[in-house]
Image (cartoon, rainbow, N blue to C red; front, side, top):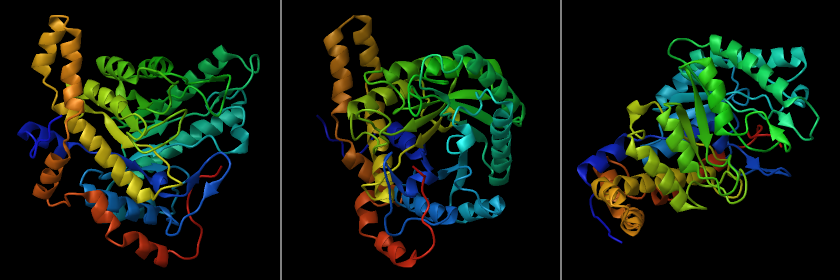
Length: 392
């Protein structure tokens, strides 16, 4: 293992240009299926969420966009919210739809057999496009809880047909410079089948829609043992990876801090991304944290996640691609693997600390934020009102 004090110029450039989007809901109260936990200082409205998100960006310099969840983040004037974000040095990122918490969506939303329910779900997404335009967002993210719990409960094929029709109408509502990204998840809350369970299903639907529709991959939405980096490579080959949601999991969709459960998996995934330059701003892939925190400090967890991604990205950028290609050409299995592992075990923290100081950022953003007193300040100020979070 090596410990470079400085990073190569091209690596430093890529790290400085790489940005992550953070989720507004990651700053609200979260929990498990059994309980949502409150903590002192939790934001009481979307404006306070943005204020907390600005802390993550201020200390890392790498998280300038914030995803909104609608209607969780509904406000009377989205133009005002956009201006508030601008004043904080932030941009509004993706608008995430929500068709999984209303009683009428119990048996599906965009796939529901009831035309009235399906109509409401479609209209909700068209309303999300209006929110995009009011906030300056260019991307609509769709994740569906739709599915069934029992064989025979509904027609799998008919639900796919209804989904295709619903998505087609939503897609027609997009402007020229707007995109739709379709997320997939292999189970939960439906347990027999979900209507968008895997990358293949998502890919088929977005290919049918057109070039403004792409796939979003969430690292927590796969069965244990899934080779996620293979999926990443395939979607990049088809130019259909529109967004990538970072988190970490042990068993299911655990939404843990990025890299906390399997740092080597994160390295393998990012290596597939950097090989084709998809980490660069012009690639069209939106990288985002999609995590909820209920045990740990929410801002600290977001900062730690940004740092974990930066460290892993730096390691992948240090891979000697020429030597790797040569070893692969010679079928030297051990040498090829050793080249990857050497980069993975490289301690890039001193180099990243030096780079941050060059950019006017604290060498250790995590420690600097913990020492800032911000959490104690907002805990004292944010008294009264209703804390924001997701309902479970």
